[in-house]
Image (cartoon, rainbow, N blue to C red; front, side):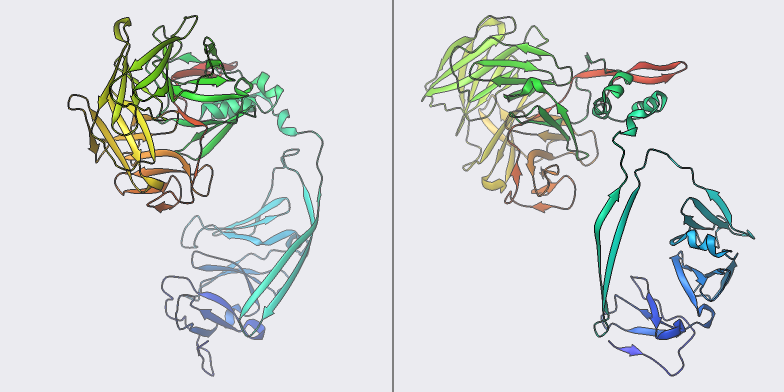
Length: 553
């Protein structure tokens, strides 16, 4: 290491280090001289300076260009503020008797602001008190700390520390070990003893409806103290800006809801879904299958169930969906099965029917459905086929018509396909092998072609195996993005594809690449957009009352 030294060290500050602050440490014994080391200097140059006024002083904090120091040679614990650049010293009151100094955590010292600021304050933390000094004070002010009994668990630990110093390399290695930890823990949880008024204050300030629901699940006492939501259908449509990604483990009661915009996952116990599989999602309802024959609608927010007639056979649907929420009399559930070239079996059931209706769809074209759920638009179900075909099953006016539209093939090599409806328009999202490209197409029905889109015109897409949605990008920066149930490195940090950059990006962090290698896809999931509003508690003069909310966030 190159050094700049003289027989008599300079008492002036070295030149400004540039991008990083000086690293200052003692030079030799007695702390009469200080080394100033510039960590950004490629030549590793350091400067030695001498400041007699800080001889015998220990630095407790370095903030705002000032150092808080204590005189180790003083019996009274004299303290001072020192500016290394101007050499200015501001004497602080002595800390006083030894017993007080012993109870102060010296490393907890804080300089709130520079002495040039009238709000300047030096603060020490003790075992059960705070010691403060403001500019102009002649003495330290001691304030007792309010103890929150029964809310914090006390921990004691035996610590063993070893250190090794390599003088030649100028580095230090420290090893800390805690072989035993003693925890004084009560068998009871004191959180459940919160007063009802405090619990109510917490509840009304929770920003998300799901947080409010989780609060009630903490204990039986909390569930009885915090009233449940009163859900009702919202006639204006969805109550959240962007959908949640719901996933369910068929072997467990617990389901997860992920909000991809804030990377938060909520867990709920839903025993109604044990052993059931997600088939489709729309308007806040799930279409579920259980066993070989049973299918039912389930609303995860109200826990309402609408049972469908049993299937006549063990069927393997290539795609299934429904037209509207099962609370509507117009609800039609539609499923398609593949028989052979140019033949498909179509099954549908209307709300209130006792059995499924089977219709055989035949066309001259060799239509083979892809494993993509149909979408409903303007009285017809659209089924994306393999290669260049699009099947259309029209149910308007109580009549059934099956036609196959022969479109121009949009891509030659397709890895994954998604179909969605956007205000009467039919969109298709096609993903190339391992995500090397993503294209969005809009159907030109009259000309029988797919038109590629270079922009989503202020929209954002959410696609998955069972449900895909197109929504208005109400938040800045959300437009021209396509969200997938695919994650990299973090199960909650999902990816989106940007049409602007032509790359995959993580919702949080700086992950970016042009393909989907080393990523994971969540398979048993669906995007959900509740069309419910709710009522929850709010403070009133005599206690708690219910009030209506139009949004869930």
